[in-house]
Image (tube, one colour):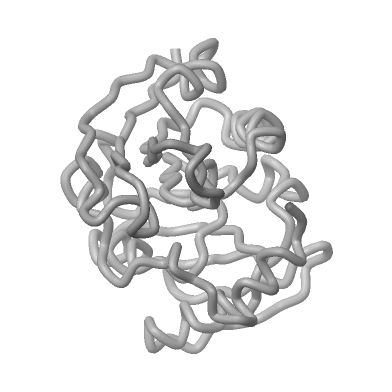
Length: 212
């Protein structure tokens, strides 16, 4: 899986991974991050998720990174906001009040891009990556975000029945990636209505990760 895979998905409008509502887990469990108004939440591989509008409405700042500029343009259009767009190699950066999105490779982000990040919300990043990329992703995320707490959303289903993304990630793998440095709490787990891609039973889980 490479960058072109995601560019092609957006070009062909194969964006079934994009949901039209705010994730209910975010609404229920955002308070678990103990954020104050004005704090910054980082969303890796953010796409044009409606969760961003929800976070902004709570008085929070949002930083994101996204490979597809198409997704980012549509995000700002749907927010009815005209961004300031600058080129800050290796990224193109879209900014508006309370919102900053880096267009480019997640692995090019450095800690200085995210010095203000008080928390991470990963609804669509870890599950978007095949297993051989997930270890590098989680290592880099911990490097650039230091001790920031995280809300993490995952799915479990029979991976032999259908291909990801989104990929199936169980509790053992979450611990494999984060257990050394984080206290991991599974906050809830629910059946996915209609199953994964309408084909196989699936469950959606949400975890709270606190450093220490």
